[in-house]
Image 1 (tube, one colour):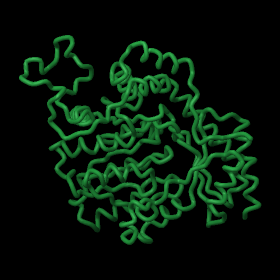
Image 2: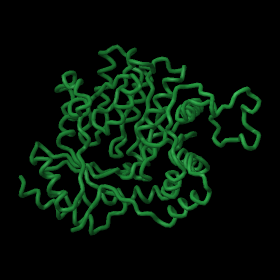
Image 3: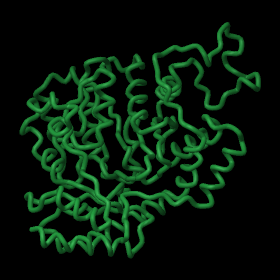
Image 4: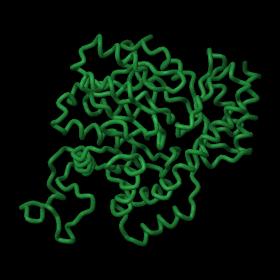
Length: 400
């Protein structure tokens, strides 16, 4: 039986050479490959700085921690409210809560899963805006949020915008890459993502101070934050200081450093990013055509050449089919599936204490969270794989 996976990774000659270069260098912890990756990724996104970390979750934590440590942003503090999406991977909310701030949810657009900006505006009008510190939109499945509207509201109410672009490598909003449209943005390079290395994350910004803070905080808050260590060359900026900057800590931080191997795997893929995005777009378009006959049952992905698709999201219409049974049937036919994350304040057990507060307030998020799922659309799928997916959906009519 054919197996069609959510994500896959084909190690090419470029990737093998990059990994072998690391082995031959004898340097496994952060070094020149990480620095090269950071330079290439910031250039690709269109920002001045990039800080690589060990996961997308770490990217969220280190970005928020840098904002907390920056005295220019007094509203970012313990207890501050951050507006974010109820439907996404739980790491976004976890980062907010772990750093002592409060997530506040608004409903989402049913087609693009982006924040309902009208609800954000109403919330800031009716609630005390001084309690809010930031908006953290999530570009879920690669779909950009309405960043003009979000930035307008942020400026009006003195809020920071931090984009969660973990799933949106290369997606465009009005010609600019998401991640370059706010003060800072995070990315994940998890195995199923468009640039995939297993585990790694990054934060991009064009703010020099935030970039420096993130470099320090990701390394247990140590004093030094040079792009490349100059100590061995006798050019360390702290060479005459009565302390060693590597073991002097100005901030309470984390060990979020990544490895040379992960950066080495990412670098060749950055150079292929546009081809990867195009292949995924073509796969989404093909599946949309093949599955259009089920449009009365499913909401198929909204197609746009501006979207760098993480996966192929489907929402069951009007509870026409039992999601669990359908996903099990597809799995039995060799087609991998995943649920579309769930509505965090009403459907995730870790946040059950929020259920009463948000009961019936997020109808679209609740529905998508219980009726949405996704398939793979990655660049390694063959035309035969895509045809096989469409054939596997023939069982749908039997279930209605």
